[in-house]
Length: 351
Image 1 (cartoon, rainbow, N blue to C red):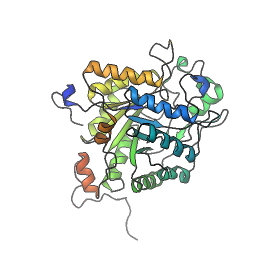
Image 2: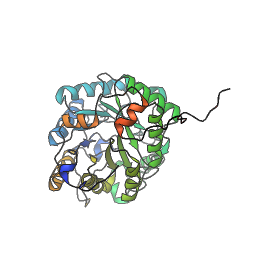
Image 3: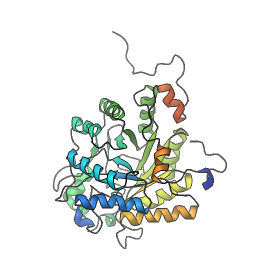
Image 4: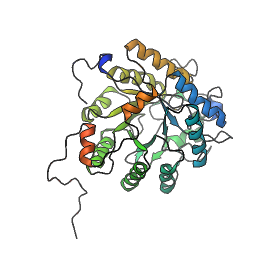
C-alpha cells in the first residue's frame, strides 16, 4: 500500500469498518456467562446488539443448546437466517474454522476437508467465509500471559495443551478448491493473512486465475505460527499489499486494543469481540463484545474517523463482486499486471 502525504488525515481515509466476533468458540459459557450467548435467540440478539453499537460485519460461529461449539451446518443456517431477518444489511462472515474449539480433554481438530467445503452450500448464503491459506501452527497461547487465562477454561491444563498444539490445515489443493466453490456460490473469500508468505500465496492464486474477486483480508497477529503483533510485521506486509485491497487488523488478548488503534490511525479496519479478548486493558474486569465495539467507536471519533455503516462496508469490501479474468482481478485490486509471456502456472512440464 502507498502511504502518501495526508494519509493519516481522516478525510483521506475510508470510514472505519468494525468487525465484531462475539460468539467466542474458544471459550466455554462459564468463562463469561454474562456475555457468551448460548440459545439461538441469544445468539441472534448478540448480532443485533453489536450492529447497533457500530459493528458492520459479524464474524459468525454457532453454539449448540448445551453451550458447546456447533459442528452442524444446519445450526449455521439457522443462525444466518435469524441474523438476516433481524439486521438484513449487516455483513455476515462465517468463520471457516468451524470446529477448532476442542471438547474438554480432547485435542483441537478441524472438520474433514469435504465437510469444510460444505460451507459453500450454506443456506441462506453468507457474504463471506474466512479462508486461511497455507497450513500453519495456530498456537493461540504463545503470546498470552498467565493472567490472560487465569480463572478461565483456557487455563485448564488439558485445554491449554489442546490450544497450544492447534494446527490450521490448508494445503494448496484444498484451498484452491475451497476458493473455487465459494466463488461459484457467490460467497467472498475473506483471507486470513498471518504473514508475508501467506499473502504471497494469495497473490499467486490471483495471478493464476484461481481467485477472481476483491482482495479482502484480515492480518492475524496472534503469534504461535502467525505474525507477532508488532508494527514491523504489519508494515512489511502492507508494503506488498496493493492499494485496492481491504485490510482488517486482528490480534488477541491485550494486543487487541493497541493493534486496533494502529489500524484506525493507518486507515485500515478493525476487529474486536470476546473471541479475541475477554479482559479490559488492566485485567480488572471482563469486557463484553458490545463494550469493545463502543470503545472503538469512541476512539475512532477521537481520531476524527467516521464509522462505516453496513451499506458502506458492503461497498468498500465489494460484497458480491467477482471478475472474469486474472487480468481484470489484478487491475481492480491495484496489482501490477502479469508480465507478457510469463508463465504464471505451476512448475511442471508436459509429458
